[in-house]
Image (cartoon, rainbow, N blue to C red):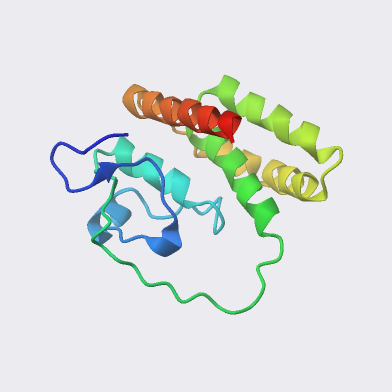
Amino acid sequence: MGPAPDLPGTQVLGFLACASVVRRSAYLDVGGFHPVLFFGGEETLLAYDLAARGWGVTHCPDVVAHHHPAPSPRNGRSATVRRNALLTAWLRRPLPYALARTVELATEARCDPDARQALREALARLPAALGARRPLPPDVEHAARKLETAAAAIGATT
């Protein structure tokens, strides 16, 4: 998203939680990781919430985070990440966007067991997500759409 005018690094609107450093005060200010999501793609919502509250989110290549994951396999991760992407849409994105993501996942669920599991789990958590729904401010929503357009363009060329 370009250089941050008042921070080191390049502005981003997402990151991998296991490869990041976040100010404790910023994390607590936005309420941390959302309980509806738990783990697996939860950092997108955190990045949205940080940006919505005015915290800068940047990539600083000089900062190194060390992550030592458990050696056990991560079964079901694909379904969890897809579930949380859909719940993030319902928690923060415009309703037409969330509906379109739901239709996409439901279409995939017809022939993909991971998508089926993701949809089933998302629907079970949807009432809680709707109760906590807080759409992004216009500037953050604009940035999210801009990134999706760029990602789609990159995906179309690979």
